[in-house]
Length: 458
Image (cartoon, one colour):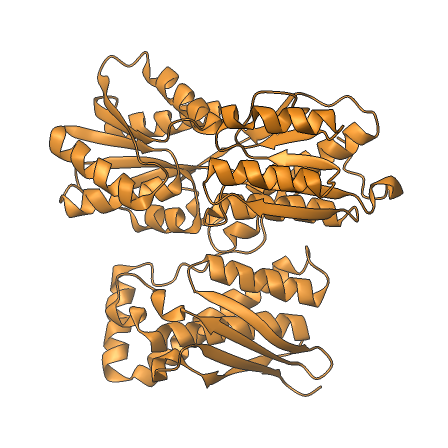
C-alpha cells in the first residue's frame, strides 16, 4: 500500500462508513482511524452508527448510496441481510470494503484483525494459567465472522490437549448483563469450571462480575479479547483476568483507506488483509495502559502515544494515602491534583507529536480522558494567545480514581483529578505552566463541572 496523502484526485471524495455501535470502544477507534487517514487525503467521511440493528444498518447503507458516496466501508452486523445492498452498490459502480466483520458478495477487500492467531494466543495463555488441565468454557457471540475466527483459533489450540475439556459454549450477546447472567449459570452448572474465554471486553466485564458474585475469584481464571482500558485495569489488579488479546482498530481504519486509495489508482489490492494482534498479560500490560486508546499507526508502524502512571498500585501505599486522607483531606487533594497533572502533561507531550494543531491536540486529549471513564467533556473556549481555556465535564462523579479506596469514588476526588489532568494538558499546549480553577463543581451539587485553565503570563 502506498500510504500517499498527496494525490489530488482523492480530494473531495466521500467515504460512507457503516459500523455496529458507537457504544463499542473498538468501533469508535475504528472510525477514528478511518477519519484520520481520510482527512490526510482531503476526503470526507460520512459515518453511520447502526446501533447493533441489522435493519438499521441496511437502511443506513441505502441512505449512504443515495447520498452519492464514492466508496462503502462496512462492518457487517448480519451478512446475509446485506446481499441486496452490496448488489445495489455494485450496480452503481461503488466499491465496497469490509472491516472487522466480513460480508458475502462483491467486496473488494476485507480488513480485519488476525483473529485466528488471537484465539490461539488466548488459548495458550489459558492453558498456561490452568497448568494444562481443567474444565473450560466460552462466552461468545454468534454470527460475527471476527468472533468465529477467534473461536476457531482457540479451539484448534485446545484440540490436542487431552487434559483440558471444553464443557460449554454460550452467547453473552456482547452485552455485559447478559454475559454476567450466562456466566453465573455456567458456574452453577459446572462447579469444577476452571477457565473461561470471553470473546470481547464487554463480555469480560460481565463474566468477571459473575465470578466475583459467586466467590470464585480464587478458583476461576479468565482470558479476554480487546485490551480496553477497563480490561487493562483488571489485568493490573491481579484478579481472575490473566490477560487479553489486543486489537488495533485504528490500524484497520488506516489500512482500509490506504487500500481504497490504491484501488482508485489501479493498483491490485489483496482480497483480505489481517492486522496482527498482541497478547497483553501482567508482564507487559503497562505498555497498553494510559493513552492506550491513542494508539496510532502510520505506514504500518505502531506508535504508542502516552504512558500510564499506575495510580495507587501498592497496598501499603493505599494504606498511607488513607491515613493522609484521614489526617488532611486538603493534602490528599493536592496529591490527587498533582497525579492528574503529571499524567496529563506526560500524555500531552507525546500526543503533540501526532497532532501538531493545538485544537486537534486538545480535542484528542479530552476524548481520551472521556474514554478512560471520566464522563464527557466539552471545550467551551480556547484562546492560545492569552493562554486560557474553559472545559465543561459531565457525569465525572461516576468514575473512580482508585477503585479500592472509598474516598477515591467521591465527586470531590474525581473533580480534583480531572482539574489537574486538564492543567497538565494545557501546560503543554500553551507551552508554559497552567493551573486549573473550578467554576462549577459536582462535589458541591452542581449538575456539571466547569474548569477554567489559565497559563502563567509570558
